[in-house]
Amino acid sequence: MSETIISADLVASQNAHRKADLERDYTSLGERLDRRGIAIDAIRDKVEKFAVAIPSWGVGTGGTRFARFPGAGEPRDIFDKIEDCAVIKQLTQATPNVSLHIPWDKADPNRLKQSASRFGLGFDAMNSNTFSDARDQKLSYKFGSLSHADAGTRHQAIEHNLECIEIGKTLGSKALTVWIGDGSNFPGQVNFAKAFERYLDAMKEIYAGLPADWKLFSEHKMYEPAFYSTVVQDWGTNYLIAKELGEKAFCLVDLGHHAPNVNIEMIVSRLIQFKKLGGFHFNDSKYGDDDLDAGSIDPYRLFLVFNELVDAELSSAEGFEPAHMLDQSHNVTDPIESLMLSAVEVQRAYAQALLVDRKALEGFQDGNDALMATQTLKVAYRTDVEPILAMARLKTGGAIDPVAAYRAAGYRAKVAAERPAVAGGSGGIV
Ligand SMILES: [Mn+2]
Image (cartoon, rainbow, N blue to C red; front, side, top):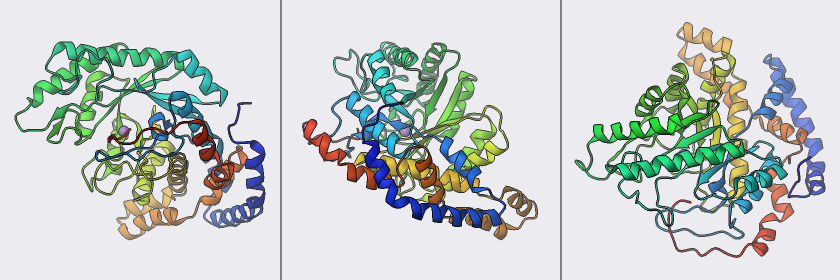
């Protein structure tokens, strides 16, 4: 039995006065789903098994390039971050793994493993960082890393990625995610083809250092920090990379890394069809790469993405096992509360997508009945699946209402007393 940070008695007493209402709601929803030929317990079983990883950097307060306003009791190091992640896991029971960013989270790997396993936490994909300069770093990434014109700088970036793999091997991670800030701010600043060639050669060296049972995820991003061009700009470029590298290489889709109004669910379908979808960084956005909480702006889009994922899951697409991770910046909320609700939103989209009557949908598609086809999706999306999600949490030891339990526990005030305030001024997303 793993340790818990919030007292189990407190969670139990929080659940006690919500349980009777939840049971009534669950029974009522069960009856309605039964009329649609859906067994509610089967959906709940799937929801219980669904997991989304927490990014270590998400539990600190984020910022913009203008400023950062620190919150109380921010984690001082990776060990504090692991404790915050343990709280999220305890109350939601949806987030068993933490994704580390190196060198931000660099520490003795054995100590890291120990501190996570105390709380029953594991490690998701390792993330390398060659988009900023670490302290005492020999060569700067100001003008790029894996695609840098200078071979020495490229070599340093390759070595850093190989080191991330080494750390991850001790931790039990099975994937490396590579996102680079390489690109240009001015037309003519770099030669597109040469920069991409250098990037591919560098990635081939990293790929060669990948253990047999690992995956390599490359993450595309349309702009920022480079504002004219990026080396890994879009899903097409990303697909070329994964194809060029080999069968352990996959594309990672960050929902915020596309042009406005792009049909992301169709991109997801394409990558699934050609067996190159590696996983997701979930977040939401209104304008650009806003890194807002998953499902907070456009929950229907999140549902449509999961509609594609469930379609692939049910048709047993070969080797289909996408990684799910949140990648958000919490500037004005308590990061723990945002991450708990975001994990639940991702779960919700999954549960709703499981309710789609796929046989009926296929019939409407084949019969060119556009109206009924889209209504078939809407019927699933409009279903309030909250009783399923809450029941899944209750059955696995989580909280029926995670935010209420978290607030009742007074965790933030407690850590604020233990962790000294972090100085504010500097900008940048952390
Ligand atoms: Mn991302």
